[in-house]
Image (cartoon, rainbow, N blue to C red; front, side, top):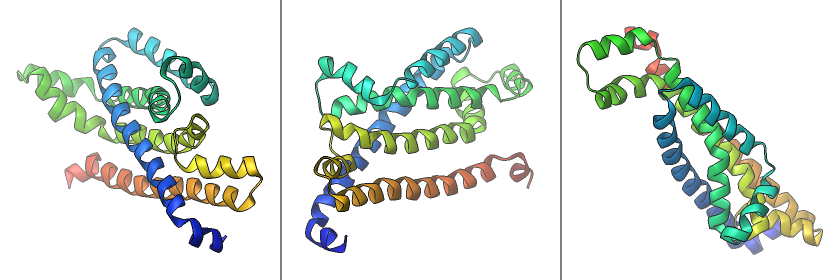
Length: 213
């Protein structure tokens, strides 16, 4: 194990860097797309349910199957992996984004509207801050999910930690399998702990008790 690390640290670092790039780009595109979808459908309960149900059906498709479906159209590589990961994240993000906005008290929105607050100002200064804890929870889920599914993306030549893991499985190399597992699990655990701390601070900041203090 240690010998492999010393001799191949550059390869492990490259795989980790590629994985972080995939996760970062996926998260950026996912949040932008989910925000647009949420803003378009949040005014209609029926449309929201239809969209979330459709996204849930897409989320239930096995990742390998979805990769295979898009390869004839997009080919293999990182771009295809990012498209698939962005599609998967829409269910987690849109569902939580909507939940955050729907949990806002209608009386508060009506009061702000009655005071003549413009729609954009209402969204930016009232709705978004109140919905932010739920939004952050959705982002948290999306990040952890992306880290895991991105490992499988190595099967379509997307790079990342999965390259080490699947190369070990193909060659029956226990050391590579272990390092691939350690990197993927360690990254997920580290990011999860970081996001838990961020969520805790956000929930404290936006909680009613904190505001009263």
